[in-house]
Length: 224
Image (cartoon, rainbow, N blue to C red; front, side):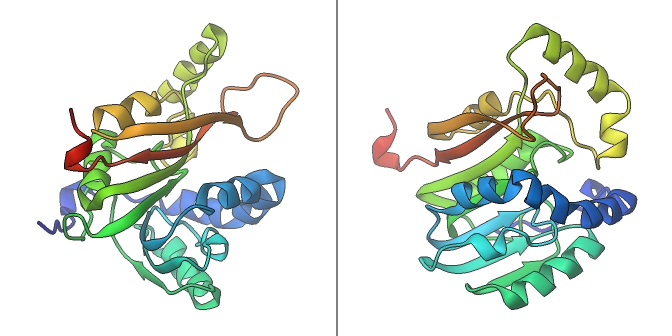
């Protein structure tokens, strides 16, 4: 079944989009590029990228990728993504849409990419359910996302920031997400998720903990 975007599910962040468009190149120079490359190195076939932003991932898809369908809800970022798509080495189509209502048929793609996206969606469980739905059995979800800190002190700092200024200033982003648990609840298996720190810091900071890796939509034969 192909889903369409529900108007009530939309919530724009135009001010954050302008800010992100300005800082994204500095983020890449500050280490995000290495995480993008590592995240995308094993992608192949038809890929759906959710929350494409400025299209910074497009340059890092390997030749095994036959097409990228990139979804981005913010008009400014989508326009920048279209510029990036024109320079990509693999075919890229940029579309309007949101993670909770993906306009794609069931079992349509070989890989789904969510790079700094799931921390800011309105309904994370609905977004993951959609990603699961559009993946073919055996297909993989590739994620690079904020994750709940391991230490009690940092977790407390994440809770305070999430309840106050962080989502307001960062497009709805929430730091203290148990994203690993959420991915498992959505039905994904074979979770190969590595904790990584970005940006690198000598001091523990609440926005540094991330997780990067893959999870698989199991084939029927893999289910118990």
